[in-house]
Length: 307
Image (cartoon, rainbow, N blue to C red; front, side):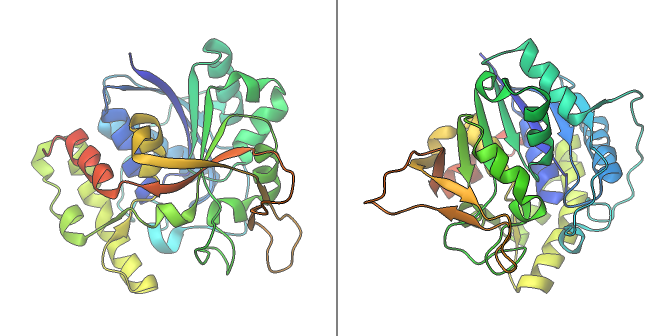
């Protein structure tokens, strides 16, 4: 039986890769994609989820949600391009009368209580708003998978902060404290999903619409990663959100107590993990600490029909 999943996404290059994989995997039923600002602005994020679905034409079309008009101080355009998709000019045909992303989440969870896994590939503002819209929602979601925060790695939004949490620390704290069943995948693990230029630039364009689409957007990400970080290749960080649903056995987790700093001048958005063994505390997340990188590669290439 397929697993029901809803994504919250600010589709940059790795987000587009993750969503393409999810919509290609016959074992996943992607019920909805809720757009959010993050790597790009709200309007562009809403356009990008339309572009993805239109170009990939999956067997089951998900419902789409419009990103709320939020402006963050941060963006990911340096790594993903001004439009989030490597500056490739894709045509976009928008659906009319889209529900706001937070209301789409509410409707889908109400339709399938206890069955949906929500995967957060962007800032947590939309999910926090959905929880405000219906305070019972955290208990009605099967699981929330969050890509955010960090443990030991240097930050990608500041010295101690990961991008998704840094965009909206208050929302991140609210979600972590919501009581939902949460799996948290920190930046430490996301950085282990590094693919070489050879892996990505040789995706065959004649293998189908998914590979053809992805082959157009990855060159920008590879060049930007080399320029900014001196790394040859590209981190497909958001793919771990799909792995957590489709192949959860590839990720090891442990119970942890995690919070988010919301006020520090230098640390606002920093994830704080209470590791004091003598201090009585209650865990609120399953914190991912190990990933089978080869298993991720095998899943990706098998799903894309390359093996």
